[in-house]
Image 1 (tube, rainbow, N blue to C red):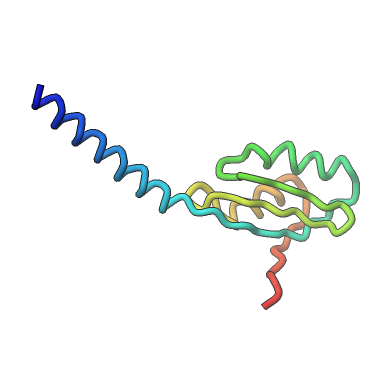
Image 2 (image 1 turned 90 degrees about the vertical axis):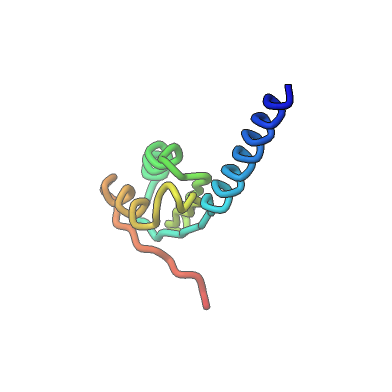
Amino acid sequence: MKTVRIILAVVAVSFLANSVIHAQNTREQEVVFSVNIDCHSCEQKIKRNLERARGVRELTTSLEKQLVTIKFRTNQTSKDRLKKAIEDLGFTCEEVKPNA
């Protein structure tokens, strides 16, 4: 019985340590792209293809401002991959840098 408790304690500590390490590596970042979207269909095309892409946590578009804002997990994707995904859909895409 004592051995079972020790094993369970070791497993619990291992699981907790792994969860902490994973949480530290799962950092979220936001990027804003200027994209040549000019209609509702363009918005929907981007949303359909990118909302469920690996690492994408949230995606919003602004037809009026021609912007696509994406929150993503840095351990699963990158700004460059997201930019390429938008360009692969046939749009021009440039990152909008925040004001310093």
